[in-house]
Length: 479
Image 1 (cartoon, helix red, strand yellow):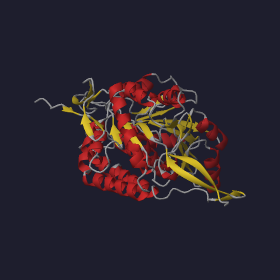
Image 2: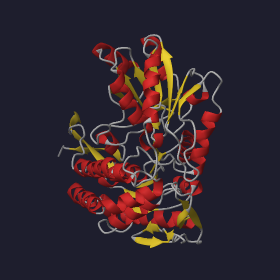
Image 3: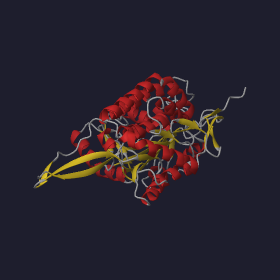
Image 4: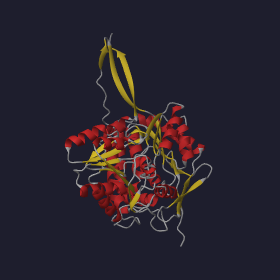
């Protein structure tokens, strides 16, 4: 039997459309390696149309009251809950993720985050108005920035789309968002759902490749460009946006250190690290994939972690026993495999280190020990189910090793010593420091990094404020 290949379409100004020139991209299942859909390969004409629609819709959306925007976002959250199974099916088809984990770990936080930003729409705080010069009153206005060009990644297509459109829409902006070329299905479905709620042109979806994203950022209409992606992509976006001084919001990956001191509970730590390292096949910018362990417990920890990896299962989306599915695409499988193939002689593969099966982009849970600070696999983001382990002698060396990479998104410390935990949280140069846990995120707290992990915050009031601009208004109060 031949699987029917579905046709996905752009969503522009309230209508589903093919690319203007009819070009398409094959969308490949990471589970079967078969084409299951085609999506538009959007060109300049499509970008122009989407930006025109968003710009035309902006004045009316900007002028809606916060209460009206809140109501719309709450309706979207409710609709996503009602269509949860459809969204889960599309996301699993996109990514190969386990259906059960997508249902429990992605839909609830997505809906919660939309509802958080719905509330944030009505809480635009600023410094108090007052007379700072005799006879004159000053006030501060917070306003939407305008049209936002947004590029979402393939590791969490639905959730990262929510992180981008929810604060933007709540603040009164209009959106043109591009999903990854390998994972467009769930974003197109979101557009179908949101199209029943939002005015035409407020939310637009453009499918395409890197050139499509580049054209969006280079377009003169957007006032802001937001991307979650690689450092290389972020640098290109920043360079392009600089030409007409666009705002830029970048989340560009990570190499999270997991610092384990000698007083940590080894069993609890191994359980937390393996779960946070292998979840979503390690395709997470905050994944617990770079473990630093005190030398006194190093060997015991590595043995326990290797066993945890051996007990971790990857497999089909409908298998309730699997911890994660395949890597997202053939290039990613090649990248992860390449890191293992290029390991230096002093490294030791304690578990995994190979592809699983001969169909689909599945990779075994992998643990590598014996590594040194300047090794490639320590310095660069693998973005796969690979956990590395290094040893350290004291707190100073732990901080040196932890901070000794170009990324600075997330980190964790595992210890029962409160003073040490507080010192480490101060000295670790990362946007997030977890203590005795790793990977939980909440809508109320900011997520974003330093250094080559980018700038700007997702989630929280800080993420909301990133989609606003500040205007000073001064008026005479004298007759």
